[in-house]
Length: 239
Image (cartoon, rainbow, N blue to C red; front, side, top):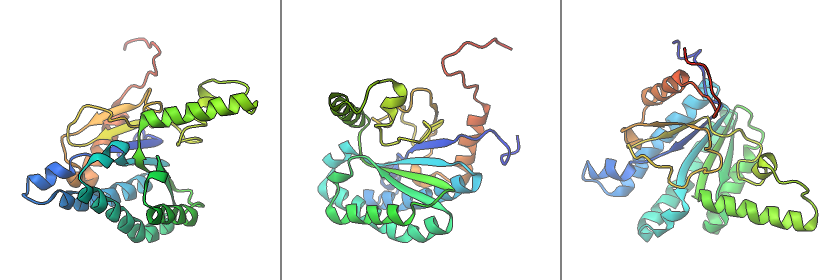
């Protein structure tokens, strides 16, 4: 199938795993793996934009990641700050809307300010919505939605609770659910990522470590998605 005309997902979500193992395999500090992973982020963002896929969500920092060594956490947040600074021109040039999802209030004030500034500057981007999940937890997202729904129901602002109304209280409100989840490094778990939204997402796992996840590796994931027969729980006659 011509890769330029294959069936493409509307929304790709990626668990970017394997930075630490990449560094360990080269006898480097873990942070070197995270630094190397930034190139893969740039390549994936550019490829997603070029393919015309309208939504991309990257799992950058989970709620559980706060338990990592303080030095590593500090370095990760500094890398995020640097990424925002360096990639803003590309976002503006490529018509990309940047969006941070998760418990952003957990982050240092300076980084929160930077995130809001980039979101404001790119808010008119229509070519691609790039979500970066930070201090994110799928279970916490659902609990947060339940608390807001309870408050709105008690006040009379919400009259009916169904799947559509529930989804409006999630960080991804107004966006389609991910069609494709890519997980690098071969791990076979969701890691508390977009639990509500992943109900019918196609899952693609590769042994490639995130810093080695090239355009070709991404293209292979998209080709595999194009071959999938998505049933959404319904029965179809066998060929």
